[in-house]
Image (cartoon, rainbow, N blue to C red):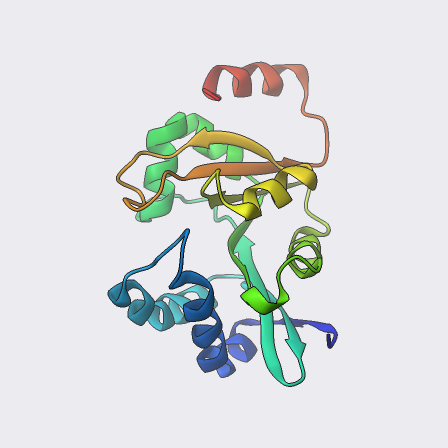
Length: 195
C-alpha cells in the first residue's frame, strides 16, 4: 500500500475518474446497491463537493490504483438550502442540528475498494480526516460494517434520519466528540438525542 495523500478540491477533481470507478466498485453491490442512476450522478456530486469551502480529501493508492478515499469539510455556519442539513434538522430539531454541526468536521464520504477492506485502510483514512477536530459527524447505515468501525473508534450513534432521506436503507448520524461537553451541553444533547 502506498502512502496516504492529502488533496484539496482541485487535486481531487483531477482524479475524479478514478474516484468514480472506486465509488461504483463499492456502492453497486449490497448493502448499498446504488441504482445505475445514482452511480451515474456521482461524478457531478463529487465535483460539487470539491467546491465546498475547505474541502479536503485523503486518498490511498496501491500499485497505481486508488484503494480508498475519505473526504469532507468543516460544516458551514449557515445550514439553510441543503438537503442533508434539512434532514438533520428534521431528525434532531434545528437547535440540535446546530449544536451537532457547530465547529465540526463533516465526513461526507469514506469508501475503500472491496479488495482492500479489513486491512485498516478505512481506519487510517478516517483518522487522518478528523485529526485536529474536537467534533466530527457523518451519516451511515447502522447495520453497515463501517458503522462497527466508527463505534470501535469512539463514534456514537446520535440520531436516526427520516426514512425518506435514503429510501434503500435506514440511515443514522454518528458523532465523534473528543472533548467532554459542559453539563448544560450534555443536558441539551440528552434532550435532543432520541437514541
